[in-house]
Amino acid sequence: MTITIPVTLYKECLRLVENGLFSNFSELVRSGLREEYKEMESMLMDVEELMAIEQSQKEKVSRKFKSKKQMNDFLERL
Image (cartoon, rainbow, N blue to C red):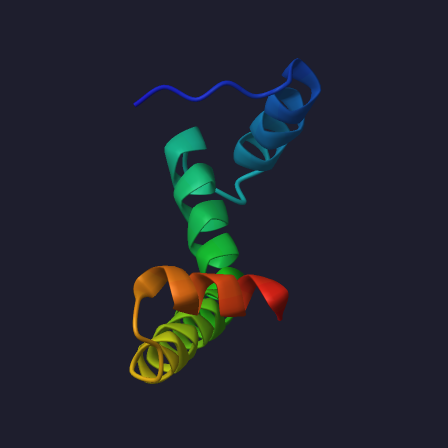
């Protein structure tokens, strides 16, 4: 895999490796990705839950309309 980062960020990352905070550049990238995923995981779960609720609501609403067009028109007005 190849990534592109600004030169200044690359130099800052190399300083972390050179000072022994990470054994190599790949370890630093993996660590950063893990941390970013941890921060975003709960947000992702919230989004997935909201999407499931929205889909459920649409299914409930669709049962009340005679056609999908009628349902979509109604939802657009909301």
